[in-house]
Image 1 (cartoon, rainbow, N blue to C red):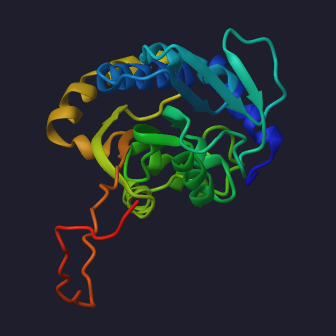
Image 2: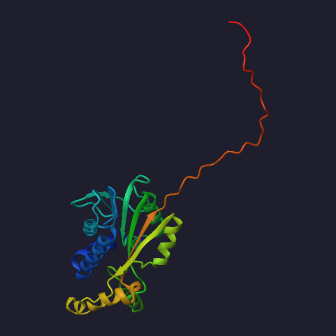
Image 3: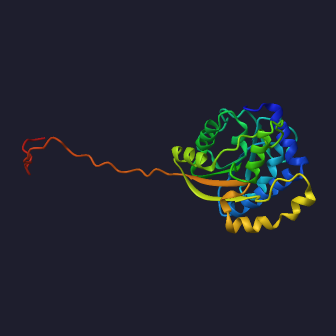
Length: 250
């Protein structure tokens, strides 16, 4: 892990205890629900931490599994405890994989993405959320870095550009289907002040939709069609004359 086990624990704690973390989960659940409501299948795998399990509400797929590097605690869903270098899942066995900010907390996000793409069925989907470097959230991260302030959750995450993730998806033979963003308000720590900027959500969706604090990318695994190969004979067969009568006795 790039940031260590304790960093993931802090991230999980921030999601549940901070109002910004709860706002983040609520906004991402709404985005996923809006864009995944027509996807069919059986198996969905969420690679993340415990307090992201609420994102399962955004899908109607029956078999829901959380894969996490944290020590398994009590959970309402089937849980697999594993590191994120090689996912212990069979190739082509999952209909939907959700990576909620997971790529931002590993030392090799491209490897994790390749593993996630490996386990998805043909025509299956992958949903990725991340913090947008080109947003008010990204500006705050830059400001904290400039002031050399000790980073806490979520600012120690590595904000990855959507362009980079799309490039990795293309190399894995995935095709982009949908992209959206949310949380256009500045990440203010005071709840009362944060609520006053609610109008920015409506303005942002219309005027500058690419600059939300959080983005969602959805891509589909391509199915490579099989092209029939016609054999061409290189050797010509000479004409053969077959007699209509058979001589001889029994």
